[in-house]
Length: 436
Ligand code: CMX
Image (cartoon, rainbow, N blue to C red; front, side):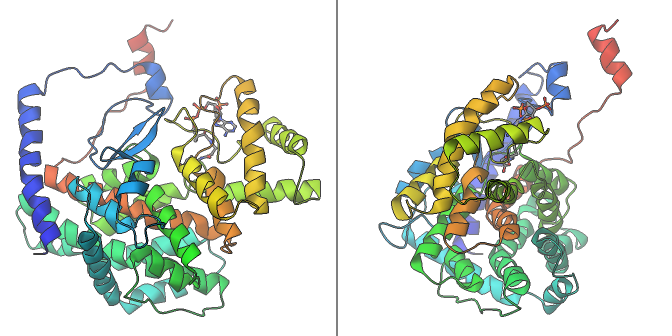
């Protein structure tokens, strides 16, 4: 047993006991009242999930095990002092609830590089059988499902493993899956956009650095950006579509591949992760229609108004929980201001930021007029030469694996049951509220 796994279960067993005790002794305590409005508006604010990896504050944004993004940038191990934190460190933090040392991060980089060596050939055959024109998220997802032939969890379940031990094969599957996603994503990227000129992984590199390398970007700047991208997209507490779906499907004791694949289908929706690609289409459409790469701020304002008037949303703006500018937007803007302040796309992102919140406020209905993570991520990648918009959501997905799969391990440590909320008919709701 590797030492991280050993540490995990040493921390995990008492936590699982605590959950059982809490439920037994306080199970009948009322924690919240739910209104009809909450049910009809996508269960906003309804507390119904136990998630330990991260928590989202509407004003402050995401905290991973209590640490904000600026704190993570300061405290998580980096390869170079002026670099960005390694996603391996964030995984360690989310899994164990404590900050890792440099050695812990190195262990994970090496462990994942080793595990990534054994992707079965049929996974690549499955990708190759899908048309290149299929969206990368389709190719990514069929590859994830195809990898489930390797599931430790499925094998252990069939062999009759004691359910208290389910966390163990889940941990193994999650570690395998996370280790392999950069190879899968880079394969799809090179297949679709670089004429199948594949680049071998370099096992001496870190997880995100290797992803940049296999995509064909060997500069330190792109590796640095990839590390940041992988850290900030990793988790956004338990209720967002990709996290909730992964958890829900996992509650049926589906293996980590099935569960994560389900989450990725949700991430591919335009109101969730696909918004990062749609932001780029929106900016491109603006530049095309205006016939210039550097529109005036007034022109940006008019274009944004036109988008709203035509009954469309402005991608990259708004959020179901956040009520301030997303710190994941701010950190990317900081990064851009530091390294590429004059990039034309970054200038455009800033112009949009200047006018869109005010326009959204004027609608009188948008609860959060501020930018989210997707408002800038594509422009940043594109400014560094990763110009193929359809891969942006897939990269988001590689990162999101870190959080949602860590939670899946904890779900099995806690021994959470199959999820099954209650639904009611319209008649029931009408009767309940006394509708006349
Ligand atoms: N542009 C135009 N209208 C918007 C809007 C935007 N960016 N954000 C919200 N609205 C509208 C909603 O569509 C809704 O309109 P109706 O009442 O006519 O249906 C109204 O404002 C109220 O919505 P809300 O309560 O403020 O927002 P929701 O919690 O329902 O939705 C979100 C949140 C993110 C889906 C929404 O803000 C949106 O569609 N944004 C654009 C897409 C986007 O950037 N998604 C990425 C989110 C981050 C991520 O998951 O990656």
